[in-house]
Image (cartoon, one colour):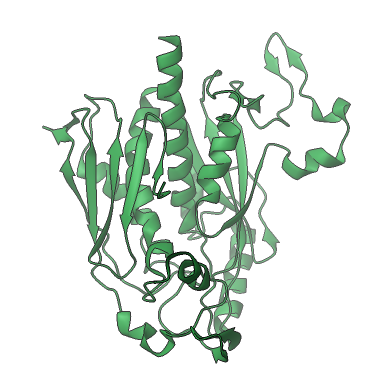
Length: 351
């Protein structure tokens, strides 16, 4: 197995490299007669593309998507939907000086160990550039979720040690970090500038909320929906941890605190994060993902070359200071893809 495909009924395969001619996705299993225009996908891609915001790389990619197949007269046909996004602003020469060095924090050394060959230009397949294809596919998944009244929205919960209060809402668009707390957003922006000046980078936490999800989604035992959501989100290169509901805090409480009491009107608390025994319970799904700092930094670091000799490296080129907020639409996309797949699976089970 190549590991480039996710999903059982709604299946997404991404392809392409950071500095190749193009990247893209093939979406198979999308139901027919769903209204789908290029603008629906472009809207999501515009949220992810580089060149915007204090934390973003100055790489200028328009990320214009083309739909090559799977639609007719503005509607899906039920056949595979092929999407392509051309790379227009790759500066491959930035990597010539370090082509024989392994960058700390990157997949350079592990790709070399696995394949015996690697694309040193921007990380190739392991680059965050690949996530644009995920976002494009996620826009199609959202169309399926829209029909079921399911909303997926994410926000910046923490960045550079600054924690935000409040709940994710449409008002987050008022600040560039998609943070529900305007005061925290200002502090986060200050931390970003400090890191940029120091030639360093920052990590953060993204919170994802799913509203309107019906009960019953999820497949026992190994395809629990929380397991599949965790896998989908952990497949994003920057993500190093996922917690759902109370998450790790549940390990510090007792059963009488952790259990969510059930009343005729529903659950009185939501420590389970909307999922019980791997199946959605109808409550809001709450997920948090921990994103590591960007690996490409200007500070000098210790490494080795491809011959195993010690060396030092300073990574040049154009890189984000923090994956947030550009990672937010990626997290939403992977959540939407997983939910769309399970929604279709549930429909097949219940008829």
